[in-house]
Amino acid sequence: MTAYAPETRGEGLRVAIVWSRFNEDIVRELLTACDRELVALGVSPADIDVVSVPGALELPLVLQALALTRQGFGPRYDALVALGAVIRGETYHFEVVSNESARGILDVQLETGVPIANGVLTTSTEEQARERAGVKGAEAARVAVEIANTLKAVAG
Image 1 (cartoon, rainbow, N blue to C red):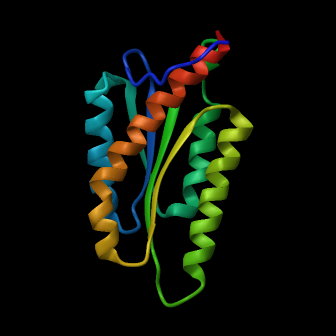
Image 2: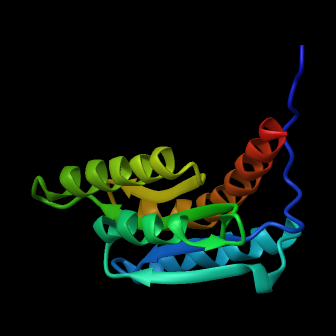
């Protein structure tokens, strides 16, 4: 039996973060925590690219464009991170944005083989989003690094 242990060292990894400007003050907290954690894990600041988009529904398209960029014979990025904050309102729009952005992120990951850590908050209130932003931003960074390393390990 071969067991692959979680590996969260980020040295040598290239990571891109795509963040939504909707609910910008909350998402900037996610972004700061994610960037800080990537560097703490050993990812060089020079190997972290950051792109902003208007809202959560625009995340999948830009993630797909980044996942398809090449460097040499392989993908330019070892992992991607999606960051956003979707807060429940009084209309059905919350469900549409939450579900479709999550589905798009998952589809891009499965279609391209480039791992994407989904750090899009979906909360009932702004207060809930603020409470989670720092923790979830750092968590998304750890997930991105671990999954990038796991894919490299299983690919041999």
